[in-house]
Image 1 (cartoon, one colour):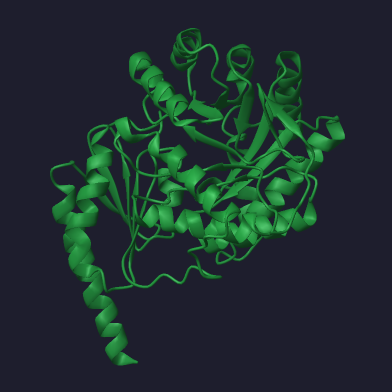
Image 2: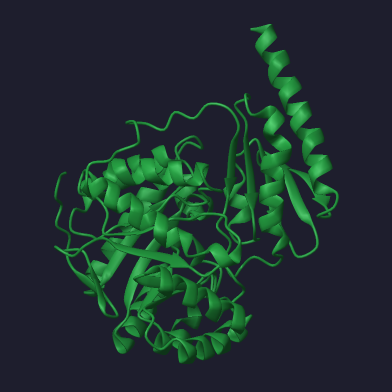
Length: 383
Protein backbone atom coordinates (compact mmCIF):
# COMPACT_ATOMS: atom_id res chain seq x y z
CA UNK A 1 0.00 0.00 0.00
CA UNK A 2 1.29 3.47 -0.93
CA UNK A 3 1.65 5.98 1.88
CA UNK A 4 0.75 9.62 1.37
CA UNK A 5 1.18 11.97 4.29
CA UNK A 6 -1.18 14.94 4.29
CA UNK A 7 -1.17 17.66 6.91
CA UNK A 8 -3.03 16.97 10.13
CA UNK A 9 -6.33 18.60 11.08
CA UNK A 10 -8.32 18.25 14.30
CA UNK A 11 -12.06 17.56 14.51
CA UNK A 12 -12.89 17.62 18.21
CA UNK A 13 -10.94 14.74 19.75
CA UNK A 14 -10.26 13.12 16.37
CA UNK A 15 -7.31 13.92 14.13
CA UNK A 16 -7.21 13.13 10.43
CA UNK A 17 -4.31 13.36 8.01
CA UNK A 18 -0.68 12.99 8.94
CA UNK A 19 0.02 9.54 10.35
CA UNK A 20 -3.44 9.17 11.94
CA UNK A 21 -5.69 6.21 11.12
CA UNK A 22 -8.46 6.79 8.59
CA UNK A 23 -11.52 8.13 10.43
CA UNK A 24 -15.00 6.78 9.69
CA UNK A 25 -17.98 9.09 9.67
CA UNK A 26 -21.62 9.30 8.64
CA UNK A 27 -24.60 11.64 8.58
CA UNK A 28 -27.96 11.67 10.30
CA UNK A 29 -30.80 10.78 7.95
CA UNK A 30 -33.68 12.35 9.87
CA UNK A 31 -35.04 15.88 9.67
CA UNK A 32 -32.97 17.91 12.13
CA UNK A 33 -36.09 19.55 13.59
CA UNK A 34 -37.29 16.08 14.62
CA UNK A 35 -35.09 16.30 17.68
CA UNK A 36 -35.88 12.91 19.22
CA UNK A 37 -35.33 11.06 15.94
CA UNK A 38 -32.07 12.90 15.24
CA UNK A 39 -30.75 12.23 18.74
CA UNK A 40 -31.57 8.57 18.13
CA UNK A 41 -29.56 8.66 14.90
CA UNK A 42 -26.57 10.17 16.69
CA UNK A 43 -26.84 7.46 19.36
CA UNK A 44 -26.92 4.72 16.71
CA UNK A 45 -23.90 6.14 14.93
CA UNK A 46 -21.97 6.62 18.16
CA UNK A 47 -22.77 3.04 19.18
CA UNK A 48 -21.47 1.81 15.81
CA UNK A 49 -18.19 3.65 16.42
CA UNK A 50 -18.52 6.79 14.29
CA UNK A 51 -15.59 9.17 14.66
CA UNK A 52 -17.53 12.15 13.26
CA UNK A 53 -21.29 12.63 12.78
CA UNK A 54 -22.68 15.17 10.33
CA UNK A 55 -26.00 16.99 10.72
CA UNK A 56 -27.58 19.34 8.17
CA UNK A 57 -28.98 22.79 8.96
CA UNK A 58 -30.92 24.94 6.53
CA UNK A 59 -32.92 27.38 8.66
CA UNK A 60 -33.24 28.86 12.19
CA UNK A 61 -35.47 26.00 13.37
CA UNK A 62 -32.69 23.54 12.51
CA UNK A 63 -30.26 25.67 14.51
CA UNK A 64 -32.52 25.61 17.58
CA UNK A 65 -32.87 21.84 17.22
CA UNK A 66 -29.10 21.44 16.93
CA UNK A 67 -28.62 23.12 20.31
CA UNK A 68 -30.86 20.50 21.93
CA UNK A 69 -29.18 17.64 20.07
CA UNK A 70 -25.78 18.83 21.26
CA UNK A 71 -27.04 19.05 24.86
CA UNK A 72 -28.30 15.46 24.63
CA UNK A 73 -25.09 14.09 23.05
CA UNK A 74 -22.35 16.29 24.51
CA UNK A 75 -19.41 14.03 23.59
CA UNK A 76 -20.13 13.45 19.89
CA UNK A 77 -17.80 15.00 17.31
CA UNK A 78 -20.34 16.87 15.22
CA UNK A 79 -19.91 18.28 11.73
CA UNK A 80 -22.52 20.64 10.37
CA UNK A 81 -23.66 20.68 6.76
CA UNK A 82 -24.48 24.30 5.94
CA UNK A 83 -26.57 23.44 2.87
CA UNK A 84 -27.62 26.58 0.98
CA UNK A 85 -27.43 29.13 3.82
CA UNK A 86 -23.80 29.82 4.68
CA UNK A 87 -24.84 32.67 7.02
CA UNK A 88 -25.99 30.12 9.58
CA UNK A 89 -22.33 29.27 10.31
CA UNK A 90 -22.02 31.69 13.23
CA UNK A 91 -25.22 30.30 14.79
CA UNK A 92 -24.18 26.64 14.66
CA UNK A 93 -20.42 26.83 15.18
CA UNK A 94 -20.68 26.91 19.01
CA UNK A 95 -22.25 23.43 18.91
CA UNK A 96 -19.97 21.61 16.45
CA UNK A 97 -16.36 20.73 15.70
CA UNK A 98 -16.47 21.05 11.92
CA UNK A 99 -18.22 23.14 9.25
CA UNK A 100 -18.91 21.70 5.82
CA UNK A 101 -19.82 23.95 2.91
CA UNK A 102 -20.43 23.24 -0.77
CA UNK A 103 -18.79 25.76 -3.16
CA UNK A 104 -21.69 25.26 -5.55
CA UNK A 105 -24.17 26.46 -2.92
CA UNK A 106 -22.43 29.66 -1.84
CA UNK A 107 -24.17 31.70 -4.51
CA UNK A 108 -27.67 31.05 -3.12
CA UNK A 109 -27.48 33.72 -0.39
CA UNK A 110 -26.25 37.31 -1.00
CA UNK A 111 -25.61 36.69 -4.66
CA UNK A 112 -24.05 40.10 -5.17
CA UNK A 113 -21.29 39.37 -2.64
CA UNK A 114 -18.00 37.90 -3.95
CA UNK A 115 -17.39 34.25 -3.04
CA UNK A 116 -14.06 35.15 -1.43
CA UNK A 117 -15.87 37.38 1.10
CA UNK A 118 -18.14 34.49 2.01
CA UNK A 119 -15.18 32.15 2.47
CA UNK A 120 -13.44 34.76 4.67
CA UNK A 121 -16.56 34.92 6.82
CA UNK A 122 -16.62 31.13 7.19
CA UNK A 123 -12.94 31.08 8.16
CA UNK A 124 -13.48 33.81 10.76
CA UNK A 125 -16.31 31.78 12.32
CA UNK A 126 -14.26 28.56 12.24
CA UNK A 127 -11.30 30.26 13.88
CA UNK A 128 -13.42 31.84 16.60
CA UNK A 129 -14.91 28.50 17.60
CA UNK A 130 -11.99 26.17 16.88
CA UNK A 131 -13.77 24.35 14.06
CA UNK A 132 -12.21 22.47 11.18
CA UNK A 133 -13.79 22.87 7.72
CA UNK A 134 -14.56 20.68 4.75
CA UNK A 135 -14.86 21.93 1.20
CA UNK A 136 -17.46 19.50 -0.12
CA UNK A 137 -17.79 19.36 -3.92
CA UNK A 138 -20.64 17.22 -5.31
CA UNK A 139 -21.24 16.32 -8.95
CA UNK A 140 -24.90 17.33 -8.78
CA UNK A 141 -24.31 20.81 -7.39
CA UNK A 142 -21.13 22.16 -8.96
CA UNK A 143 -20.57 25.92 -9.23
CA UNK A 144 -22.54 26.89 -12.40
CA UNK A 145 -19.69 29.14 -13.60
CA UNK A 146 -17.34 26.15 -13.56
CA UNK A 147 -19.76 23.91 -15.44
CA UNK A 148 -20.20 26.51 -18.17
CA UNK A 149 -16.47 26.48 -18.97
CA UNK A 150 -16.24 22.81 -19.96
CA UNK A 151 -17.86 20.26 -22.23
CA UNK A 152 -21.03 18.81 -20.72
CA UNK A 153 -19.47 15.32 -20.86
CA UNK A 154 -16.59 16.43 -18.63
CA UNK A 155 -17.99 16.42 -15.11
CA UNK A 156 -14.67 15.88 -13.33
CA UNK A 157 -12.72 18.98 -14.37
CA UNK A 158 -15.33 21.49 -13.06
CA UNK A 159 -15.37 19.70 -9.70
CA UNK A 160 -11.60 19.61 -9.55
CA UNK A 161 -11.25 23.27 -10.47
CA UNK A 162 -13.81 24.27 -7.84
CA UNK A 163 -12.02 22.32 -5.12
CA UNK A 164 -8.59 23.68 -6.04
CA UNK A 165 -9.90 27.24 -6.24
CA UNK A 166 -11.30 27.05 -2.71
CA UNK A 167 -8.10 25.48 -1.40
CA UNK A 168 -6.22 28.45 -2.81
CA UNK A 169 -8.64 30.86 -1.13
CA UNK A 170 -8.24 29.15 2.24
CA UNK A 171 -4.46 29.07 1.85
CA UNK A 172 -4.33 32.78 1.00
CA UNK A 173 -6.43 33.57 4.08
CA UNK A 174 -3.98 31.53 6.15
CA UNK A 175 -6.39 28.80 7.28
CA UNK A 176 -5.03 25.24 7.09
CA UNK A 177 -7.54 23.27 9.18
CA UNK A 178 -9.54 22.05 6.21
CA UNK A 179 -10.07 18.92 4.16
CA UNK A 180 -11.72 18.38 0.77
CA UNK A 181 -14.21 15.94 -0.71
CA UNK A 182 -14.98 15.39 -4.39
CA UNK A 183 -17.94 13.05 -4.81
CA UNK A 184 -19.95 11.45 -7.60
CA UNK A 185 -22.34 8.51 -7.79
CA UNK A 186 -20.02 6.84 -10.33
CA UNK A 187 -17.11 5.21 -8.46
CA UNK A 188 -14.86 5.53 -11.51
CA UNK A 189 -15.30 9.30 -11.47
CA UNK A 190 -14.65 9.36 -7.72
CA UNK A 191 -11.40 7.48 -8.31
CA UNK A 192 -10.28 9.70 -11.19
CA UNK A 193 -11.22 13.00 -9.50
CA UNK A 194 -9.52 12.17 -6.22
CA UNK A 195 -6.38 10.86 -7.91
CA UNK A 196 -6.11 14.08 -9.88
CA UNK A 197 -6.70 16.20 -6.79
CA UNK A 198 -4.18 14.25 -4.72
CA UNK A 199 -1.56 14.80 -7.41
CA UNK A 200 -2.26 18.54 -7.50
CA UNK A 201 -2.54 18.99 -3.72
CA UNK A 202 -0.78 16.12 -1.92
CA UNK A 203 -0.84 18.12 1.32
CA UNK A 204 -4.63 18.41 1.68
CA UNK A 205 -6.51 15.67 3.61
CA UNK A 206 -9.24 13.99 1.59
CA UNK A 207 -12.69 12.87 2.70
CA UNK A 208 -13.73 9.96 0.45
CA UNK A 209 -17.23 8.91 -0.49
CA UNK A 210 -19.42 7.69 -3.35
CA UNK A 211 -22.49 9.89 -3.14
CA UNK A 212 -25.90 8.30 -3.72
CA UNK A 213 -24.24 4.88 -3.80
CA UNK A 214 -27.68 3.31 -3.32
CA UNK A 215 -28.93 0.29 -1.41
CA UNK A 216 -26.93 -2.71 -0.20
CA UNK A 217 -25.35 -4.73 -1.68
CA UNK A 218 -24.82 -2.61 -4.82
CA UNK A 219 -24.05 0.55 -2.86
CA UNK A 220 -21.44 -1.30 -0.81
CA UNK A 221 -19.80 -2.71 -3.93
CA UNK A 222 -19.53 0.72 -5.59
CA UNK A 223 -18.09 2.25 -2.43
CA UNK A 224 -15.66 -0.61 -1.84
CA UNK A 225 -14.27 -0.33 -5.36
CA UNK A 226 -13.59 3.40 -5.01
CA UNK A 227 -12.05 3.04 -1.56
CA UNK A 228 -9.85 0.08 -2.51
CA UNK A 229 -8.48 1.85 -5.56
CA UNK A 230 -7.79 5.11 -3.68
CA UNK A 231 -6.69 4.00 -0.23
CA UNK A 232 -4.17 1.52 -1.64
CA UNK A 233 -2.59 4.54 -3.35
CA UNK A 234 -2.40 6.37 -0.03
CA UNK A 235 -5.35 8.60 -0.91
CA UNK A 236 -7.99 9.16 1.78
CA UNK A 237 -7.90 10.40 5.37
CA UNK A 238 -11.55 9.96 6.37
CA UNK A 239 -14.40 8.02 4.73
CA UNK A 240 -18.17 8.09 4.60
CA UNK A 241 -20.25 5.19 3.25
CA UNK A 242 -23.58 6.51 1.83
CA UNK A 243 -26.32 3.88 1.79
CA UNK A 244 -30.10 4.06 1.49
CA UNK A 245 -31.17 2.36 4.73
CA UNK A 246 -34.10 2.38 7.14
CA UNK A 247 -33.40 4.84 9.96
CA UNK A 248 -32.79 2.18 12.62
CA UNK A 249 -30.07 0.58 10.46
CA UNK A 250 -28.06 3.79 10.01
CA UNK A 251 -25.15 2.41 12.02
CA UNK A 252 -24.47 -0.08 9.23
CA UNK A 253 -22.73 2.70 7.28
CA UNK A 254 -20.06 2.79 9.98
CA UNK A 255 -19.84 -0.99 10.23
CA UNK A 256 -19.43 -1.33 6.46
CA UNK A 257 -16.81 1.43 6.37
CA UNK A 258 -14.71 -0.23 9.07
CA UNK A 259 -15.03 -3.62 7.36
CA UNK A 260 -13.75 -2.16 4.09
CA UNK A 261 -10.81 -0.53 5.88
CA UNK A 262 -10.02 -3.78 7.70
CA UNK A 263 -10.15 -5.74 4.43
CA UNK A 264 -7.80 -3.26 2.74
CA UNK A 265 -5.38 -3.39 5.67
CA UNK A 266 -5.25 -7.19 5.57
CA UNK A 267 -5.12 -7.50 1.78
CA UNK A 268 -8.63 -8.87 1.23
CA UNK A 269 -9.50 -7.07 -1.99
CA UNK A 270 -12.73 -7.62 -3.86
CA UNK A 271 -12.55 -5.08 -6.67
CA UNK A 272 -11.11 -4.86 -10.13
CA UNK A 273 -9.26 -1.81 -11.43
CA UNK A 274 -12.43 -0.28 -12.87
CA UNK A 275 -16.12 -0.50 -12.04
CA UNK A 276 -17.50 -1.77 -15.33
CA UNK A 277 -21.21 -1.79 -14.68
CA UNK A 278 -23.50 -3.65 -17.04
CA UNK A 279 -27.25 -3.89 -16.75
CA UNK A 280 -29.67 -1.97 -14.55
CA UNK A 281 -28.05 0.60 -12.24
CA UNK A 282 -30.10 2.04 -9.35
CA UNK A 283 -28.70 5.22 -7.76
CA UNK A 284 -30.27 6.44 -4.51
CA UNK A 285 -29.18 8.86 -1.82
CA UNK A 286 -28.62 7.82 1.81
CA UNK A 287 -31.32 10.19 3.15
CA UNK A 288 -30.61 13.19 5.36
CA UNK A 289 -32.47 15.99 7.13
CA UNK A 290 -33.38 17.54 3.75
CA UNK A 291 -35.67 14.61 2.92
CA UNK A 292 -39.22 15.83 3.42
CA UNK A 293 -41.01 12.48 3.26
CA UNK A 294 -39.68 9.21 4.67
CA UNK A 295 -41.67 7.42 1.96
CA UNK A 296 -38.61 8.10 -0.20
CA UNK A 297 -36.80 5.19 1.45
CA UNK A 298 -39.62 2.76 0.69
CA UNK A 299 -39.86 4.17 -2.82
CA UNK A 300 -36.20 3.35 -3.50
CA UNK A 301 -36.77 -0.24 -2.38
CA UNK A 302 -39.96 -0.52 -4.45
CA UNK A 303 -38.25 0.88 -7.54
CA UNK A 304 -35.54 -1.76 -7.28
CA UNK A 305 -38.10 -4.55 -6.95
CA UNK A 306 -40.35 -3.26 -9.72
CA UNK A 307 -37.46 -2.77 -12.16
CA UNK A 308 -35.96 -6.25 -11.78
CA UNK A 309 -37.53 -7.31 -15.06
CA UNK A 310 -35.20 -4.78 -16.76
CA UNK A 311 -32.01 -5.91 -14.99
CA UNK A 312 -30.30 -6.96 -18.25
CA UNK A 313 -30.69 -3.51 -19.80
CA UNK A 314 -28.00 -0.82 -19.49
CA UNK A 315 -30.28 1.74 -17.85
CA UNK A 316 -29.66 4.01 -14.86
CA UNK A 317 -32.52 4.99 -12.55
CA UNK A 318 -31.90 7.63 -9.86
CA UNK A 319 -34.06 8.04 -6.75
CA UNK A 320 -33.24 11.21 -4.83
CA UNK A 321 -34.82 12.40 -1.60
CA UNK A 322 -34.75 16.20 -1.78
CA UNK A 323 -34.92 19.43 -3.75
CA UNK A 324 -31.33 20.51 -2.95
CA UNK A 325 -29.29 17.90 -4.82
CA UNK A 326 -32.14 15.97 -6.43
CA UNK A 327 -32.61 18.00 -9.62
CA UNK A 328 -28.90 18.07 -10.49
CA UNK A 329 -28.03 14.54 -9.37
CA UNK A 330 -30.74 13.06 -11.61
CA UNK A 331 -29.69 14.83 -14.82
CA UNK A 332 -27.29 12.08 -15.91
CA UNK A 333 -29.70 9.22 -15.20
CA UNK A 334 -31.87 7.73 -17.93
CA UNK A 335 -34.82 8.04 -15.55
CA UNK A 336 -34.65 10.15 -12.42
CA UNK A 337 -36.90 10.97 -9.49
CA UNK A 338 -36.54 13.58 -6.78
CA UNK A 339 -39.03 13.60 -3.97
CA UNK A 340 -41.12 16.38 -2.45
CA UNK A 341 -43.41 16.06 0.62
CA UNK A 342 -46.50 14.87 -1.32
CA UNK A 343 -45.31 14.17 -4.86
CA UNK A 344 -42.37 12.87 -6.89
CA UNK A 345 -40.76 14.70 -9.81
CA UNK A 346 -40.04 12.30 -12.67
CA UNK A 347 -37.41 13.06 -15.32
CA UNK A 348 -35.95 11.51 -18.45
CA UNK A 349 -32.38 12.72 -18.46
CA UNK A 350 -32.50 16.46 -17.75
CA UNK A 351 -36.08 16.81 -19.07
CA UNK A 352 -39.11 16.79 -16.76
CA UNK A 353 -41.86 14.22 -17.36
CA UNK A 354 -44.11 15.59 -14.62
CA UNK A 355 -45.10 15.39 -10.96
CA UNK A 356 -46.85 12.31 -9.58
CA UNK A 357 -48.13 11.24 -6.19
CA UNK A 358 -46.32 8.52 -4.27
CA UNK A 359 -49.18 6.15 -5.21
CA UNK A 360 -48.89 7.00 -8.91
CA UNK A 361 -45.16 7.14 -9.41
CA UNK A 362 -44.29 3.44 -9.72
CA UNK A 363 -46.84 2.90 -12.47
CA UNK A 364 -45.70 5.94 -14.40
CA UNK A 365 -42.05 5.01 -13.92
CA UNK A 366 -42.75 1.55 -15.36
CA UNK A 367 -44.43 3.15 -18.39
CA UNK A 368 -41.37 5.32 -19.01
CA UNK A 369 -39.02 2.38 -18.39
CA UNK A 370 -40.89 0.22 -20.93
CA UNK A 371 -40.77 3.07 -23.44
CA UNK A 372 -37.04 3.53 -22.88
CA UNK A 373 -36.32 -0.19 -23.33
CA UNK A 374 -38.33 -0.21 -26.57
CA UNK A 375 -36.50 2.87 -27.89
CA UNK A 376 -33.10 1.35 -27.10
CA UNK A 377 -34.11 -1.91 -28.80
CA UNK A 378 -35.28 -0.03 -31.90
CA UNK A 379 -32.10 2.02 -32.02
CA UNK A 380 -30.01 -1.14 -31.68
CA UNK A 381 -31.88 -2.86 -34.48
CA UNK A 382 -31.26 0.07 -36.82
CA UNK A 383 -27.46 -0.02 -36.38
